[in-house]
Length: 109
Image 1: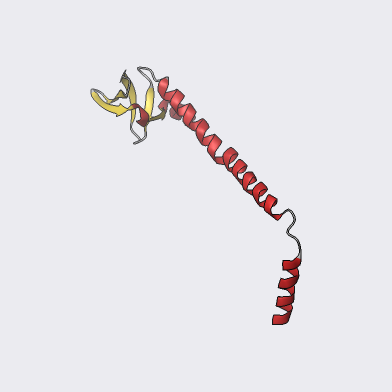
Image 2: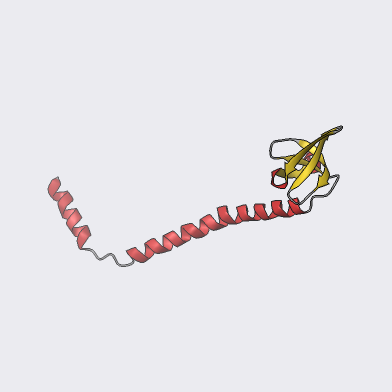
């Protein structure tokens, strides 16, 4: 049995590799391209949309924070927003913690 395996290994070693090295590079490039179009590009698109949303915030917008707090924007500054949660309860949040428009969520239900 060992003689058969040794003969097969020697026969395989004697055959020329040919395009083996270039096929490896082609496969690596193909994997990178697939990862770019299915993972990296959509993430960049979501980040761009979120940045655009945060720049377009206005007083009176109903929003949801990353912590799940629903409220209405009562004041906007360069780095933070003041969100009115209930009555006279206002909480200051960093702009980066505002996640989405809650009016879209209410309409979806």
